[in-house]
Length: 102
Image (cartoon, rainbow, N blue to C red; front, side):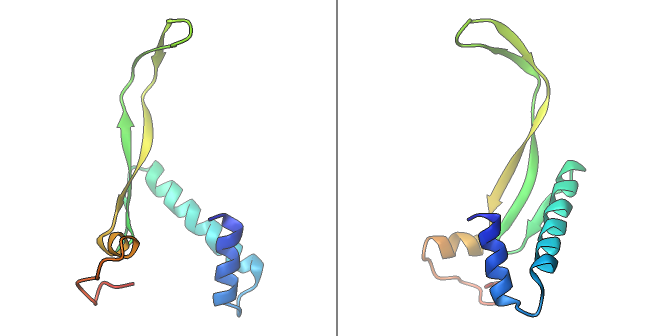
């Protein structure tokens, strides 16, 4: 799903807000997630899942074309762990606890 499609669906659901307001709220939401992950915090959205960052250690890698050894600095990757409710909805399983259902 594209950002424009998400904004379109939000506009249909919340027609009392302008397109600019919805886009601004969406951008703030994305910035908050990005800044939290950059600062080493995990993002937990109940029923949806958890976003966290994992460390890729620095190491020597090899260019397969030239067989030359290169040094790769430490970097981060994004890790997503799916929530139980989302997992059940995707796989058409019954949601066991109705209080957590989204």
